[in-house]
Length: 591
Image (tube, rainbow, N blue to C red; front, side, top):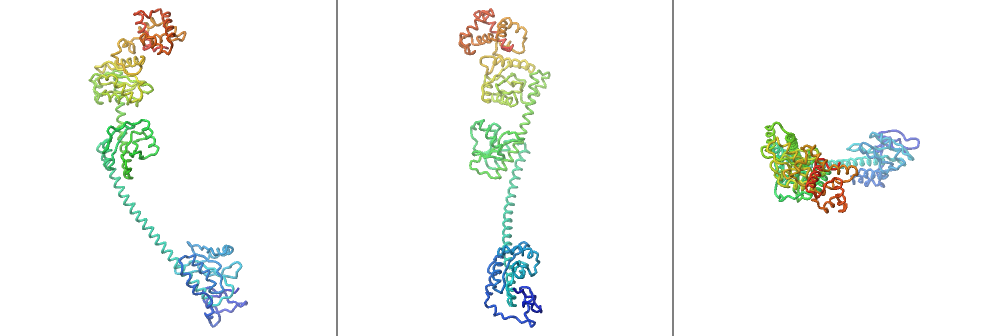
């Protein structure tokens, strides 16, 4: 196959094979020394008009390159071996390149710098890589070989096809860049519009947040409590606002629609609700309420809620609720701290009173600071509840119950009971009944002292309350309230009295029975005590001891024989009954 013509103006002779010296495709080399051109009529059989128009019928760069490669053969004895497009400064081969040719030509083409150069195509004669230069710069390469010697006119047409292809690629590239620029401009406009909307929203949001901060800061600065906080939140959101304590009881309400009466909480369901909100974090919608926990330092002090049956609350409302919950947490935490300090000081005063104070003037002044009038008649009340430790929580419960029944009190606690120094006499069993409702169980015992006119008498009254409590605990009806004034003979049977004479009395009347029980592990003294507690009734005594009546008769007979006392004798019966009471209350019963 003949090689390509040389550069324009070359005046060399044909090579030995009759071909022309190699020249650059697309230029106009001379064929003779006179520079004559072949007649263009020899091109009439080529489809040059279609080849010249085809690249401009599309805006797709790959398609333009494909059309150019398809029409290479239309302008002369040429064959398009490969095409390359410049993509991001890299030469990317056209999919039409044969796989066997690609690897051989790619490296050569990629190292070119915009020049037309000879290139070796496997299985072909020498070819050339023709640069596709256009107004937009270098767009790619066409790799072309010739199966015979082309004429000057064919060289000219190929050069024209290369220029047309490069121009079409420039147009396509310009169009693509214009489209990309238009898309980028459209994207930037959208982003600008979105940014403007976000900026407006942010200004509105910041304005609302500033209003929330200012409203709640004003409440805090004015010393307003939880009522002021809920009122401010109601004005900010328009929703009814409520605060419940840790147990679901209403503390405050702002806005319309307050239930009357407010429903009593279910402790189990309320605790489950609190745990669910704590797990999820943030405000949580439950039925018609949007609820936020009031939880400073992890301890739940209550809940702040908006009543929103139509689910109209938006992000601004949630923000206001969360901020108000934070303010309320600070307020309730402060109140809690003050209450704890006051409780500690109250306990210190009560401890001093129970232990005996030498400074009555100080005691009066300290009690007055707590709103308690020691000048009035005082009663000491001792409270003990089954399965309830005498801790801070139970002490607060007892204090609330005392206030609920009209007993202003100073409260403290001991290892197994709570002590009240109360103004005025408790009303019958009102305190016991209130505590039974508060704790959910009636298994409690209360002892109440006689009246106390001066602070120096409080230690003795404390012992009386303990004695009343112990008598109640040792009686058949263990739970309820016992007043010291109602003890009668039992006033001498308790702490604060001399034990020696009482022990001698018990030993005289019950000694043989106590010794017999100790040696034989029987319960004759306990049987005798129950017999007296039941008023000498055989059926009631046997039932209380869970034994048969015949067994009871046998035990009573053994008691007569061992003690030597007649249970039908009035004196013996009285002394034995008193002795069993002393044995049980003073000496602790069996053991």
